[in-house]
Image 1 (tube, one colour):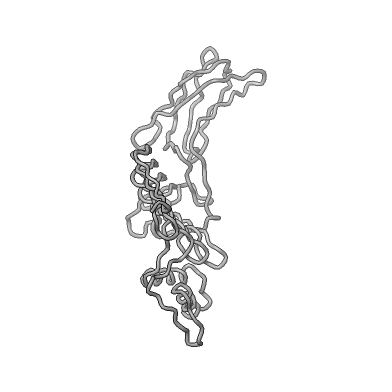
Image 2 (cartoon, one colour):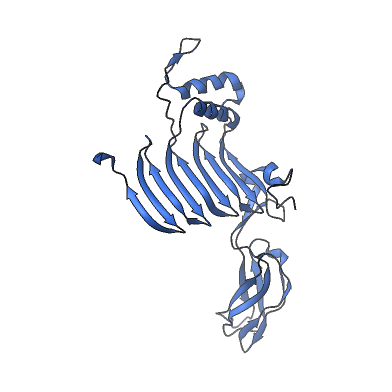
Length: 286
C-alpha cells in the first residue's frame, strides 16, 4: 500500500531518492508466439489481452488464428512484470491457434515500467541525475513505475530549463520551458563588494555571496537553489521560452511562445490534440 501511495506518511514516492544509474526500464507487455517445430513453422496468429477496469488480464482473445502451426507452439508474455503471468499450452486446431488458457494472471502494462535494480516491483520515488559539481540535472518522480508529478530540469548553474507535469506516465497539466539566461530587475544598481569589486548584475552579486556562504558546497544544487530563490525574490527573472498545456497525453489549452525579452511570438489553442486557433505575433509590424 505504501509503495503505490503518493500521500501516506513516509511513502517512498515522497521519501526515496535514487540516482539514474540505479534504475532499469522494462518495456510494455506483448504476446510472443513461437512455433518450435523443426521443419515448418506457423505464422499469422494475433492474440490480444482482454483487460478489466484495473488493467488485469481476464482472458486472451485470438484475433487471428494464423495457419501452419504445429502442436509445439509456445506462447509467453514479454515486458514489465511478465514473470507474474502463467499460461497454459495454446490450443491448436487444423494449424490455427484457437485459444490460450491463463493459469495465473497479472497487470498488463501498455507503457514501459521503471524498477529499482534487483527489485521485482515497480519503483516509487524520485530519480535524480547530477552534474559533476553536485547540481541536479533532472529530477523525475515515479509512482508504481510511471512518471507521476512534476519533472524538473536545470542547467549547471541552477537556472531552470523545464518543468513538466505528468500523471501516471502521461503528460497532464502545465509544461514550461525557460531560456537559459537571467534578466535582472530594471531598478538594479551595480554595487561594489567590500574588496571594491563591482557587481554589474544581481545574478553575479548573489553568485559571489554564495561562494562565501556555502564554501566547498558552492556549485551544488543546495547553493544554486539559494541563489535562484534570492534572485527571484529580488525581482530577477528567468524568461519563459514556451508554455504548454496537456491533458491525457494530448495538447489541450494554450500553447504560447516567447522571445528572450518576454515578447509573445505565437499563441495556439488546442482541444484534445486538435489545434483550433493559431496566431503569430510579428514585432516588426508594431
